[in-house]
Image (cartoon, rainbow, N blue to C red):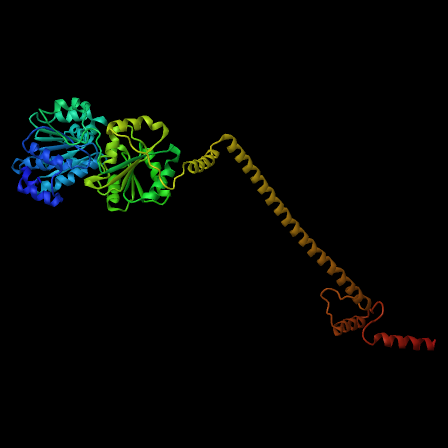
Length: 508
């Protein structure tokens, strides 16, 4: 059995190997490390998850000497995504510490000023994405004239993403005497023709044939229309569990839509794609690795940037446009000899893409039935959902809904008006009853007054009501000589007057 010590690595780098937890070299490491230590240019093709990062990091940093330290980087690693850059920095950081070297990465999605300051302090190993490195070159913030080792990681992916002009400009800024190492999951004639001028008589390390997939991954397809994919995914998650699952979608919009549906279903899911900031993407990956996020929904741009062990299975929610992306997607599961599982949802219109994938991997992919998923029942449920959704957008149905709402509003107004009228009628009736009651009490008082007036004369306003007062007033008036008109009604007077009148009659 070959060991890392057998490959010619120094003691300081072997100490870093122990810290990284590597026990024995993988095939790509065993073949690449000796060639890289010799200073040879190299093209290495190996399946995802086979240890390519260590295959170039260990020998390259071993070749760098601390005595040669300058402000400009001596080693430059170009990689297509921020996630890959961070993963490479983690590995290189451990090795560099044992060698006394300085490591930094410069990627997009974050402020450029701190990166400029970091480069000004001096860097030995620089890990960069093409776009941000070009920005720094334009600002003359980075000097590539001292680069001794150039690594192009995931080279085919960078070319597919349109980075070839940027990569060529970066390569031209480095010395012609540099060592160039090119690593990728797949290498074809198209890639070789484009990078041929960047390398000098390269050694070829071919661990995986083009399109080869891991033997430990069980691959299946499930035929389903696009409209029923959410139902099929729900049934699959229920059947196989929802822990450490990666779902690949074709576009950012599709990834976000699938993630929202998973969240509504109660799953801890996060979407990761190029529209997310670096911090958001890093947090999503960290949460997924820690287990706080169960399902990661990603696009092809990040298929190679997800380096997480023990992924339960991969779901290709959409068939990839490029057949090579299928290899990278399913390479997230079944890593390091572990068993993996991958299922691809194939819509009727995806037959050409499926044929291209099967041609690439040189075998047909069997079909699988997911327990708990009935195509007819799911179609009926989807049709019902579509009817409800279309009702919101159909012009005739929308007009009918508006007319109904108008009638309901009118009916509500009429009801409110009727209630107001009823309230006013009740109030009017109450007022009439009170008025009738008050008018009925007044005549009773008048009759009582009439009866009182029949026997006595109402006293004038302000006049004393006591009999003594009236007697004194009458007596005073009589003494004044004016006499009193009418009968004298003072107590005893009438009787005496009657007696006097009778006596007078007798005398006459």
